[in-house]
Length: 65
Image (tube, rainbow, N blue to C red; front, side, top):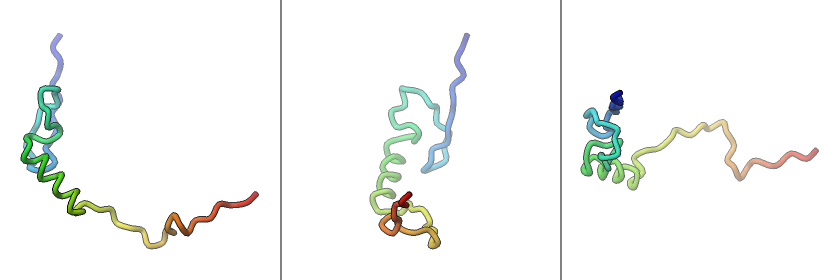
């Protein structure tokens, strides 16, 4: 019985990448794409939109029963 190799898309360049233990950069295709992604995280290029209607955690008060 042969195992089906799963492929994923490199988040940086879009190339198909085999999801195998031999690929030490997975889900990236290479070290370059991995470092580009790391640089984007370090420069805070990735962010989530804030919901202005939600109170900040400091503004939440525990309810008393």
